[in-house]
Image (cartoon, rainbow, N blue to C red):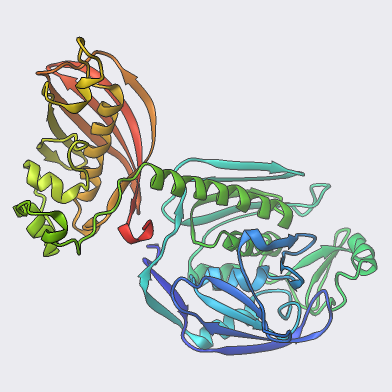
Length: 471
């Protein structure tokens, strides 16, 4: 199912009252719409100045039997069910107002929350979503839990749950869509084992707990006030909790998540690992990116230099039409790439065919890098051949009309090999094939040739971003 491209929020405010599982206190929760870019925030309206806590992994305080957030002296407990509900419906921006320390537990599932979301409605907003798309597997093993995520076109969770003795082993795999969330996951109730109850009560963790809001397992007997809602209700509730914890990443996750005996502590540690990878990717993209061009720059600011045809088209905001089985001259290349002298490494695109592109760079003795690389023995630096591959890969990604105005940010290079020197007078032929492209992350394989000899090759990774995202 296609992932929503735009951010979403609630259509109206809705309120819901009930008892907190751990505190046992009566609490009222109000879900409120929020502007684009707000994210999910909790507000303690029972406290002075009504402090807010962002639903981010940085604010996780404890993960004992549930996930809690804290900021200074302000705490919010048992946030996973309401966060899972918002994530399940694809809601990016909302404020969760509470007059107590935790949302109401209801019947131990998220069914009551879903009814409120349906009542409020979901509204599409103008700003684009920025999902975190998995391009390489990431995994974690912690205290008997195994978590791994692999590239996929949507969010899918495949989960196995069991107790420490391997009893009640259950497995379920679901793609997370609003329909699947509400029908296949949200009704699953929280559960515990009978032998855990004494510990939980002694530590004040379930003062609002009862068979009305939890399923209790005692040996081979399931204690509940109604029949199980799914034949594998326990694993589906584990998936519900996991979805809520995953939302603490702060943006939608796109990938196939494999979970074996997940727990809140392991879930949150995994989100920390994902968050570190996400920040590393963004930092790498910004570090290796050229500065964004200012479309408002005037001819006076540029000096007296004559504006080229490509710049006039660029200033008018006209998208460049790139046709298959054709080429691009240097003016057209500069309408796709922000690079300029002395760092533009593409003179002409000779062939465009699907996910393949060929270009040339005429290597002249007048190139500025030959002054120091090396005097008396001029050789084109290998890193500039890699840059040429990266620029051609950028053209390949930016030629799509929907990517007009974006920048292709170079993130990483792998399997880099330099085989032969490139000298003045050589014509460098750069061949690039796009091997993977999901949303805004692309991978490409590039080869540089002089004549029929391979002189260098590399696999490069890119991120497409709007210029204003990194200004």
